[in-house]
Image 1 (cartoon, rainbow, N blue to C red):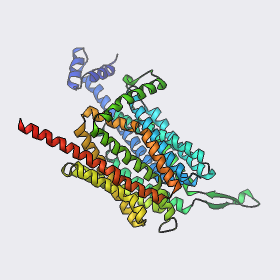
Image 2: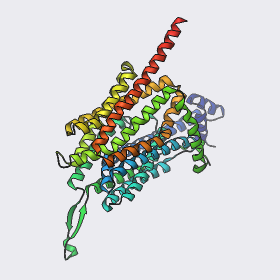
Image 3: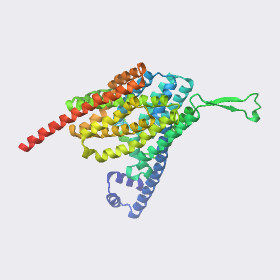
Image 4: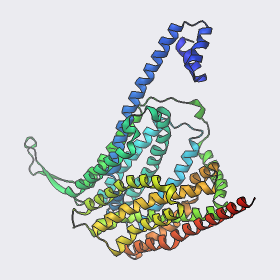
Length: 489
């Protein structure tokens, strides 16, 4: 074994360079040779860090462009234009969410014993990109079945690409070594995505759904009549998305990674699946720990379902209602949800800043009311400016409720219980999500979207808000009793 190998071995055992050098000197190595070897290792590490920073920076940039050019609202609209009914749009979104809950939870558990390296993440990213080509061609062919398959495959791809990627990037590039762009990607990313959404919508307005016919008759071909073909804006947008994610996935394969054999496992996925379901069922006991946790869980599930149903149809309604007004169907949708994206920055910042001083009760009630503003505005005052403001406030409300839920969870459960609670919440939400989203999809199909939006707003005010309010009252009452009892001792 050479000096470099010995030095690597010593550094893996000792965090102190001094101790590593002392041990090697005692074994007969010259201090000068050790310093040279150490410098060489540091130089190599710096080169790898710079390379990973550049590759991951480009990858993040491409990903944000991809997310913008194929916004979820555009996907829902094109799903409808492929021939899907309103019921099918909502129902498949419910199935997709349930699938995301299951696969995400499974991969999180499986990653504890199985190392997901760059090959796996790269493949998932490429699969996600290809799914958009399937969706685009499904619209051209008016093939709803192809769209559904592509959408579901893409949802699995983005989970594998996203969740595993977060763990991967933490292992190959520690936060203190990341570039400024990567450290603040949450802010830069929103701006890149916002611009991409607007450009995508512009493409779809310039080359509308029915396509723009282009003649092709080069002189050198001596054609009897020019060839004609159509250009579709959504096809161009989704092709750009596919290319972005495919290149992004391919770039991952060039990342310098440190493989850790500790994650190796011969366990088959099928056998682990059974273990995962069994463990998830056992962990579900946390949700019936007491009435306070049950109330928190029930309110969280209903709120999430309402948001899933609403997000399935908000973009479709705006597209249909304002298709020939202001900037046009897709541009109007893009403008509204770009406002929502920008609002998400301020919403998260303000909530974290004032969370402790405001308290859980006002945050939950106020946040739920803000979330209800969007569906109620779409019913009572479907005006583009009012919808834009309501969308921004609704996003802020969602952030407020999310932070408040976390604060209440801290009061009700230990740190270990909180981890079990939040990791298992998706699993126990699978069947309620499918059932409740299906009911919402039936209402959308049988009545009107505005009727559905009214129902969502009422559900938030009559079901979710009282549940949160009762929960906080119970917690405060018990806290006062404990405080009085403690003062009497």
